[in-house]
Picture 1 (cartoon, rainbow, N blue to C red):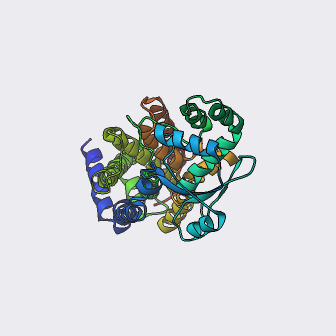
Picture 2 (cartoon, rainbow, N blue to C red):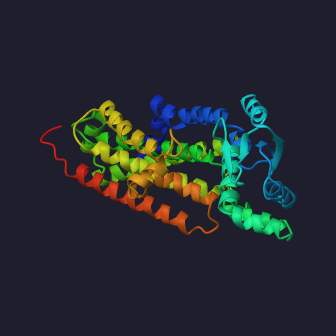
Picture 3 (tube, rainbow, N blue to C red):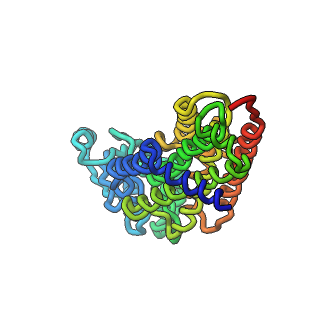
Length: 378
């Protein structure tokens, strides 16, 4: 056992002395996370979370029914709309100057049409309002003409689906946080670089260290287990650094479940090491070639999980729904994302189980390839 722990200690120390591993597993995630923070800081609060101020909208045309409906909505707090009633030409000039978010035109038959210059959250809310108004125009007209309480019109419009009350008791709906979750997934899969070294350092026909290990009295299985244990410890330290940096420096929101985020990251790192171990056990290529193969495998997985394009996971859901369930990067990021969405931990532990099973399968394949090697001479 003394030799075992010595081998584990040696692997961890040698890993931290490797400039490539330190860069890709510690420095690169920190730098990329900092860039993400600079790029996305404040975007959610200003665009996606909610509309704090009334939406200034030009209204071209006259309709007592429309005015009554809008007043009812404003009084009920259902739509933060500030209507500016004017003529067509003035409304168009206001839109071009950016003084209003859009123009609502009232036709002779009372139906509404919307004109905008861009497609942002305010314009989407206005479109939802006009669509709902047109769909319920007959009902709203009947309510107003019958002299009933005009707040009934607000109730009808509130069913249009352009606004939705969401409980923020637990969840975090910031869409930009997913980039940081995918950053954790990328760092976890970069653990494949460690796994590649495990595979190479136990093959006598690839590395001098592998030749020495195969000649040593220490059983090959024990030497392999020692290196794998050291690799997992090394990757765990890197994942803890990554999550700690995101939580306390970048201020990524893990919704009060930081320990579970650490666990998901560590298990994801195990998946990355296992993936690299399998790559390292395949073929007789040198270390640089196998590191290149790891990058070729890992980066597309991270891309398809949404690291570079936020909605890529949704695109893949439409194209190949099964792929997100087996993509290690998507599973790792989803395991952390679900902590911010679901109060129940069922989905979280389901993702953890998938990662553990994936790691076990990759490890078994890597061990089978490594242990089958026999050498005529060393």
